[in-house]
Image (tube, rainbow over all chains, first blue to last red; front, side, top):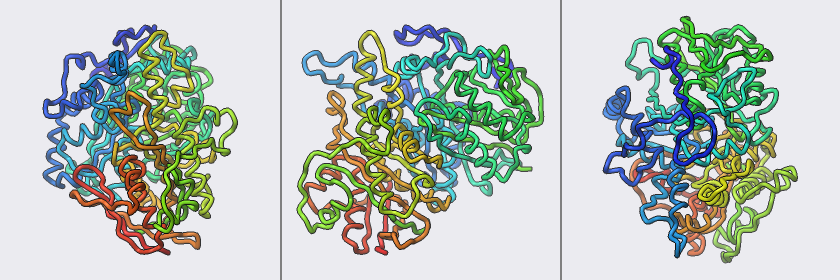
Length: 375
Length: 265
């Protein structure tokens, strides 16, 4: 929150493992010397360390513990997003294969680190929950889509509350992979800038505890008002040029919230700062909302958190509602003149009752969330 | 949760070359003969994409297409749930090898095929579907997670959902730490309402506690079921193939399971 208000970006010149790329990253510095809880040591890897570090913030463990007492461990689901889970562990292990047999090092724990489910398995055990659980791995929309899973599970009566969120941590696959696609900027990423030239890869985590409205304790609770999901059906790594899938996701989110475009006070854009994402998303937002809803991408602060982008930006959208401000956009110097939307570079105070957050991923996977307070 | 209906089945595994070709085997009327999984690139994909398709994409598209062909549902209008313990395991192995040695040149195709939702992305392109699609993983419980998610989608969203589960072996050295017995895929078209094409009604219940799982009657098929996470769904196909009412139990996580009641239509 303080970093958002002070316009303090987390992006720094890339210094991670022995990566030799000229780019900027967002790195959680304390992870190197950090370990997961000793009874869960098989799960120890960068991604789960980041998960634990995040769980320990803001009284989240205590809030989950209270929910566990209220509903029972079996009635709380855990639905989390990640794109690469603990793959860094495997990348490093492949440098230390047995020279005779080619085998992985004996201390390599596949299920607890590399496997995509490792994250949710770790969190489930860490929090002592036994409800339904899985990982959604749909690239950069993963930790937005988990809200939809949780809502359905609760509506179907499978659980009474859910821990949703996502974690993605730095790894070589992502850095070299995005670099091969020519999508990594040499500068701190500049969302929606006329000169934008790619993403900055970041690592991050976020969790939210969801309960039914009737069960909420607060008098004016923060609500998940709507979710919209769609697919582009266009290309594996390039969004639909007219933003067809993005429009569908935003319209479905508004529809599920029973709201009109004018009811939204702030849009947290996916805004990765690649040429194609921002162009496509900008067109889609202009089509659905015109140019009267303040928008911005906050990836200039966080970098692209991939499987954790959805949850991080959902939390930023809720902060905008709670504290009444439009975060604006850091690093963006000159707004792309082709954007026919109300893109905000500067921070401003504003009454934000409802915010929409966009998350779009490879494979054409789109998700929009509407968060805020009841009218 | 509401009852849902199975309107199409897709199957591809070792010695299981399609649902229609395998029904008698699954019903115990013919002997199961193990043979290599008959993998082929789908004609649903344009030529360029077909060349880039790894094993999961071949499995997912083959079983999805077979299931839709039996149903009266339009693949363009169906939501999809993909579930897999791994993903493109050959590709993950190759990328790890490339990153362990200089120069670290991961090709763009390798990278975008490495996402867990690659099969979903190719499916949506091939089926021209803009409907919601999700890609799940729950390690050994991936099939149970996919079935539970699909059932809630049908029940809550009143949607037609295609559940597509697939897994295939890793090359060494990962195979040693995560052995997966064979390349296997299965698909179910699940609908909220009965039609003349419905095979059976199913009721999916999430329950606490460890239970004795349902097993395959044939030892070879049982080895397949227990050796491939996606093949945990074979017990459901065994029940569907028998044409009789059945109660099927599939383990989910350590402390819960799914109870599935199957009633033929």
